[in-house]
Length: 194
Image (tube, rainbow, N blue to C red; front, top):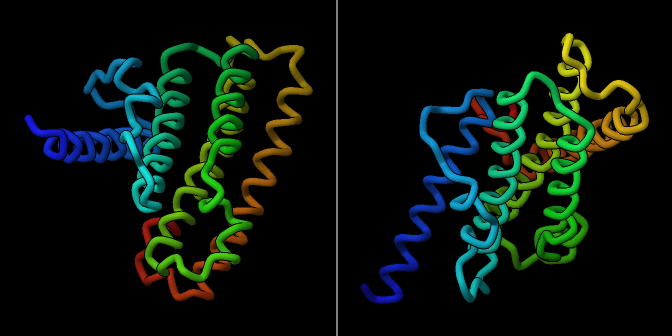
């Protein structure tokens, strides 16, 4: 098989991984499809020599969807979330955000008029997924706190930090919705608004 054909097949595989993980985390349901942790390794989701911004955006979108999927899978696999699990998920989210390519940072988008409207909106959606992951983590933690098998007793500072992060994520999402609205990116039946 030629390298170009292999690259195209990997790109298709990545899109399928994205759809599976995004749908699962959005619906709050893990399908019967068993995707091994090794296949979802971040390094397996990257394409060698990615220099095109569109490819970088696709890669980052897949990565954050996988993190959300892992978060859901963890929270559904155990009765409650432990401080260790919450810490691991938080570190994964922080690592992803810290390593986000500079062109995809919201602060940089205003300084780059060369990015097309379509790509700009896709970058917004990637950032929506990140904010959604932060809010989802808090939601799962709060759910865990109310269950009998609460493993986070004594971790009030962790919960307070998550509340702070989720509030910031909600504010950031509101700003993004404002940007989308001003730029004409919200249509009558916009999936991101639902």
